[in-house]
Amino acid sequence: MSTASKSSPRVTLVTPVFGIASYEDAVNHYVNWLGFNLDWEWREAPGRPVIMSISRSGVTIMLNEAATDSTHSRLNLKVDDLQALIDEWNARRPGSVEIAVDPPYDIPTASVTDPFGNFVAFEQPITPAQRDAMEARKPSIRRHIRQRLDAGHPCPTPEQVVEAVGRPLGLAIEVLNEFPEYEEATRE
Image 1 (spheres, rainbow, N blue to C red):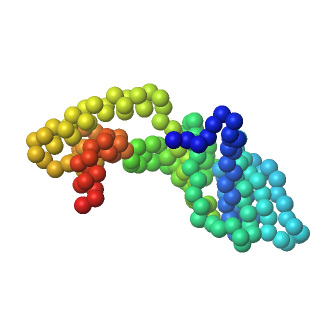
Image 2: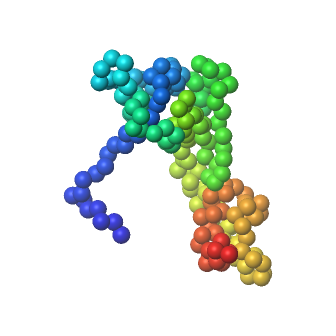
Image 3: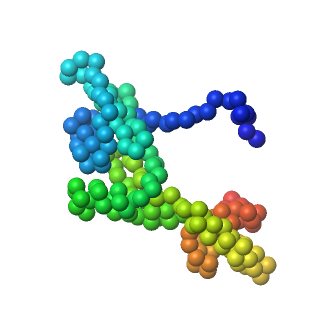
């Protein structure tokens, strides 16, 4: 049960902060290659570490050269036209980025790691029509699982459900989680 009410303040914006080790490498990666805008930068004094703000399409990321911010952060961003974005990047650095379609939900994703180990995944969201199609497949997955259990077979693994009924793996896992037998099998 949510403790939020209509009068509760809303969180409306997230701004991740990535640690970086080089201003020049950060500008080359984020601005020159990925097409982010350099909104502002600040240094306490000449030669001191930079703090800068970059943005693209309303998404802002802070980059901090100071030793207090760690590298190896991860950020997932949703993109409305992933292929167009990949084409843009590959026009600047041919063959540098590909779209992968990985489990569990087979969401098209392009992953980029900056020179400092920070990881950004750009994802093409599932459309309402794709989500509706997955929802429509749940009854056949339930029937398959129930038939196996009623026939005395052990609860199938997600991979066995995918082999019998089809992808994505995440959908098989969602439906399997409805069955107490699956929970029991995963505890063993």
